[in-house]
Amino acid sequence: MTSPTDIEGGGTAVVVDGEPEPEAKPEAGTLEGRSPGQLMWTRFKRDRTGVVCAVVVIGYFVVSLLAPLLAKLSGTNPYTLYGQDPTYADKPILDQFGLPLGYLGGVSGDHWFGVEPQLGRDLYAQLLYGMRTSLFMALAVTVLTMGTGIVIGLIGGYFGGRTDYWIGRVTDFFLSFPSQLFFIAFMPVVTSFFVDPREETPTYFRALAMLVVLWVLGWMSMARLVRSTVLSLREREFVEAAKVSGASPARIVRKEILPNVVTPILVQFTYQLPSTILTIAFLSFAGVGFVEPTPDWGRLFAAGARYAQQDPAFMFFPGIALVIFILCFNLLGDSVRDAFDPKSGR
Image 1 (cartoon, rainbow, N blue to C red):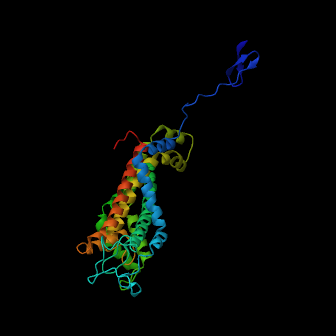
Image 2 (image 1 turned 120 degrees about the vertical axis):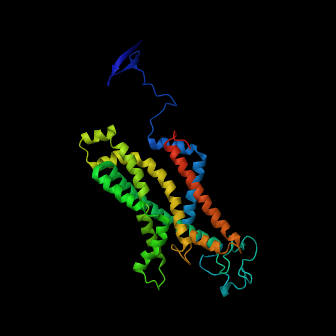
Image 3 (image 1 turned 60 degrees about the horizontal axis):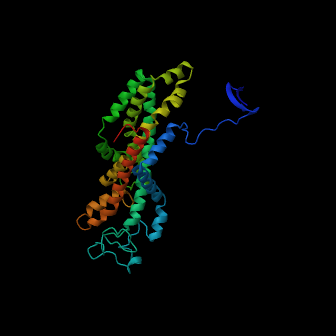
């Protein structure tokens, strides 16, 4: 005999011949709730372009980390003058005019990407170490500038009033500087305060000076982006509810507002990092960033400009490597944006 019976918790169960029938299990394929992060990751994995670009970008960082090991595989380093060192006199790589022997700038089994004219330094090793210098320098600058911009934007956007007014005026003041020209003019000034102009500036100090200058003049765009987002969020119902419940401003910003600005922050990061790499390369190209003999992407382009007529192939591998990285990072930024907001479109 079949009859319904009450069960604990307010439901009913079917009883067959005095025995309760087992509770029905959910059918296969039933939709389960997923967090915004899981939805974003699912959409991102469907974007083949984004996945490929992410793999390429990660590969660049892995190669940069393993630069010393990869250079040893070719038996070269970025500092040895293979065209002038008597130790390598039995393997000539430069002609009487200082130009690489062979094709494509001296590509051979010993020098996989060719050699530098006049000096004979290995281009493969220089590029590996140059990528390492540029990528991790740019990563440090980007983290500092974005961290500063996020904090300032959160404070100005949430508190508003006079706090927002004075933060806005300070931001406008820093935005008034022509960044590229100011970099060129200010870098020698920074180094001259601490290093005698008659002495060679240590590489670590040049890196520190670039870090400080790029940090001081690079946080404003992030601050404005975060501020504008916070201004629209602080009047939302969930923020008002947190205020009514007695939550402190610090807790409201950390728990309610900050998670909702993650999307623009991540998207901005994917655009900021390649832009910073180009800025660092520009400083080295202009002679106020990294200088000889420190390997750097910008310094390779500066050397390539000198050798453009005699050895145009010198720019081939550094140029291709930089174009691929910048392109993949920009496409990755588009994919991340679309994964967070599929209605945005490209």
